[in-house]
Length: 271
Image 1 (tube, rainbow, N blue to C red):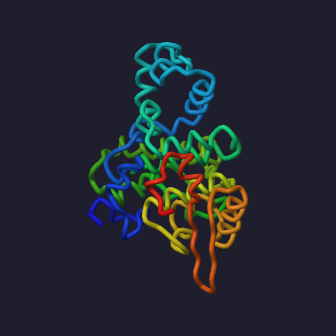
Image 2: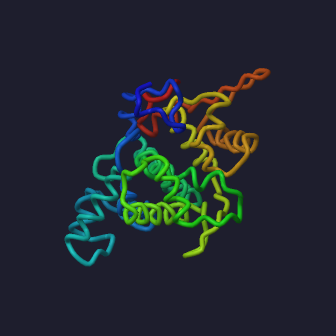
């Protein structure tokens, strides 16, 4: 594993080329330098996309489905949505999100969060200030800024750190992990079986398997202990998304071939 993958979100055997093909970004900057995960805009865009054969550019720029006041604002919104969700030329994980989006209304905030985490290293780094916190714990932007500063000492100015931290806090609020407008506190996210299957897919591409998959950061977003994570994946198994095998202390969790093919990712998971 190369230096850019020395991170808890990637297993020791993670393959950089496989991550690239899936559309997962292992390093670099991210949209949260200037924006949140834009859940409302994404929801509006995907609703319009389901009703129209037009391209992403046509929908956002020509038809202005996002209701932006100027052409410049439309272009910026398109660039930011494309940076996070690859809406113009969908990568496999974005295609996976789009495929699950229509039928899993309840899971949409976490589907969006998982793709944003996969596509924005800055958001992943902010998770250390949010995911371990107990329900009801106050989480302010300085807490997130401190987490980012630990990852990137002396890289960002105080003003930039504050902006990034506030953007990340807004994203974690949109996903359901925080609540409150100014005085935010930790709340509990509500995953669905489809979200569980998608998280398992991301974890698999990132090199996790068996019990390590259950304990990976990709499933930490569920706010559930490992036993309940497995129960949720068993619900996903009943819906045909994954397959689970147990033998003594051995645990094997596999993305079903039908799901991988539906999500255009058959070569990215072990069938």
